[in-house]
Amino acid sequence: MQKFNKIIKDILVIEPTLTGTGVNSKVSYEKDQIPESEFWRCVEYIEQKTIPTKTVRKNRGTSYVYKHLVTQYVQDTYNQYQYISNGAFIAALLYKGILVKNYSPSPNVFAAIKPIKEKKKDEPIDMLFAYECGELQGAGKNKTSANEG
Image (cartoon, rainbow, N blue to C red; front, side, top):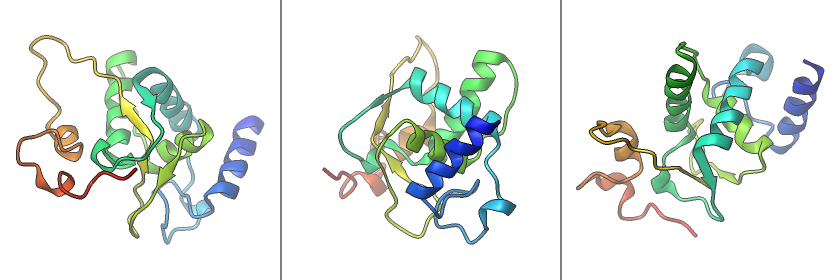
């Protein structure tokens, strides 16, 4: 627990607006904490299921999309449900030294990561993730001006 508290303290130096909700939240950190178990599951997911990139690209999905992918990962890997907060995923990104950017007053960030593709035969596509990443035909919101860097 002491190690975790130091990690969070160091992360708050990097991103002082971080709460369990995300960044730029109006809720103070004490009222919206990041549970340790969520944080370590996010670190595990980042290490196992993503590849760091050099640049942040908006077409790869937000921290909000990834938090749902971590929840699914925990379900698939450990056969249990665990809620994952947006802030826990952002904290894990910062802990791993991954560049993040926030382009609005939204609590979500974009990160310099991309998912490792592991689609199995006949597995349905995750439509929300595909839309957020701009992979669906005609998914316009991220297709035209989404990329940076």
